[in-house]
Length: 344
Image (cartoon, rainbow, N blue to C red; front, side):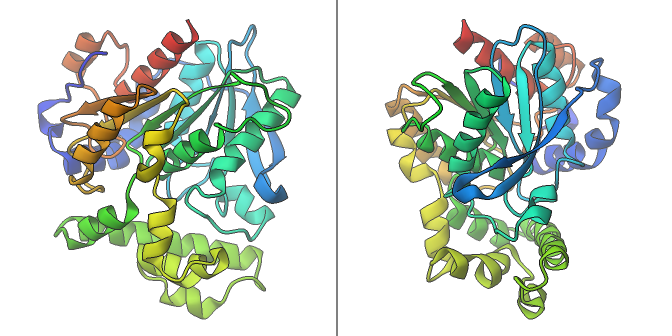
């Protein structure tokens, strides 16, 4: 795989993260000469019969299906990264199933079920794969995610080691995660102790509060407005709204149980991990552990880059020439190249 070379002014993790989120997110249409995908809406059933809203599409002569969702906040209505992935994958001949994960978007309107940061969402990926097959989206299935949904997809890899009814061995082709959350306790401590990270944490927490308020509007008897008012941080959101429903005594216990780093050594599903050393959201202490785990497990392909920020990976013209890309979306190009190689 080629290395990632960003423009000189984005050779800083925070700068890359902010540029991608604030600038590239508004101009991405100009960089991509691919038609939108004509999705069909569908309400799927997740683990525990939870309704999951999704969209699916199958091209002519499909060669597999990508199942993906997004990060800590948002909905299918505003996830431009998923739109880029979808257009690129569809153009290469892959079917698509994109979904609002638990408590998000239209899934949050359908059910008051809160997030579990992968504990149950990994099984949701498997349930969606089973239903994708019934709809005519062909295997193999490729679970993808970025940021927190990278954590969810890794839980999908764990769930995929047991083949459920409706699927057969080999139906799950592999997992691709970009800048996944791997150790929530270490990363949240790092983020809240960093002078600039505190502002990132505050911004995410405000989005989580808005998510909780939308859930309360949709399901007023299931959420305590006072608890939502107290949820003024990422930790506070999980403390006030999540852990008691899942049976955890503390947020720290919940984060330890839901973080995928401890079980990655045992994964047997082919998995690509794209991870930037300068990601401003995650503790640098995680990187040596990640390298050690991936080096010892032949099913894990780690592509650790010096630059990239948090789900940034925005290439300039020189980087595009070096990688042989026709657009700046380096990480999605590498992700789909890897899937193509696995298919062949």
